[in-house]
Image 1 (cartoon, rainbow, N blue to C red):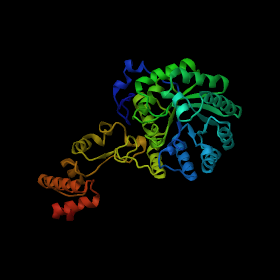
Image 2 (cartoon, rainbow, N blue to C red):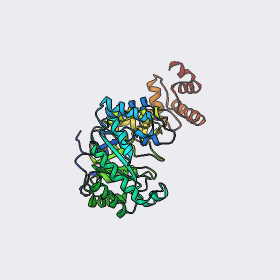
Image 3 (cartoon, one colour):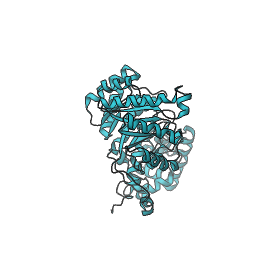
Image 4 (tube, rainbow, N blue to C red):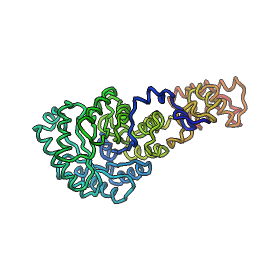
Length: 412
């Protein structure tokens, strides 16, 4: 088949994404990198606890998937976190390993002792959160930032400055703070931080462009999902030249979480033609690993990694599958299951099943049937599924068949 950016043998999306009037509005950087924060911000989700061994296993999975940087934790949190960071550094898995710290010299010293190559340094940046939540005089935020970032630089660390509550700060004040840190302290990159997920997509262009007017440093996006807009906001930021994306596996994180790596990677690749180098076929397995270790149950219809994405119950869609799905699967799905490491698509039996689903099932079992007999099984399946409020297992289907068409069940 002919290949286009929107239609390949592995995905089929809208050609409008690549219309010239659309593309001329986008200003993507040459490369886009992922900075994974599952082991730090992801663990800050209520009830999520990672042991040292958990963190090492997740770091290995992230490395296998091709993540560019791993934020391995915050050394000051606990001895276990410190030990995990040191071990991840020691294993030299491939991605750069960063630590997270407050803008305090002692925090930086702990990060240096872990052997990381970079550090993300947080400080409150809106006047209201400095005064109300931290109970600090405003000058303290400036002084701590300058002192600690300069020290981190002197220790050979790559420094990403991370202003908490950036998105609710007065723009002049926060950019003055950042400018002082950049000139009097040190900053290799600036994170645009939407701590409470309160940015709307139409505000992103303004934010990025205002930051670029004042700060001549690479920009990174750290957006939360409180209004469900973090992925859209991140893509808008990248389309304005932001080079690094902060994300977590499954979108774990404070409150509604951070942006999920899986969906963001796929959207960039298939909807915008931006290949970040992440191995998408590893995403499903990585999600299952983090689901197991975090205890965070993944919804069956979750984009990219949900267990039910490639299961077909609807009678209409099952008919499509019979007609063209085996040869043209992207007529039914926007991307092929193998692209994200999912199991092969299949028809399942439940209340939504239609006559074509049942016929296909009976044929597969070697059962000969009339149209009338197949319809009896359809109605019995619907009744059973309605009672159990679930799909039918193989055993349950055979029981329904036995009760509906006893002679046929013996053959099956």
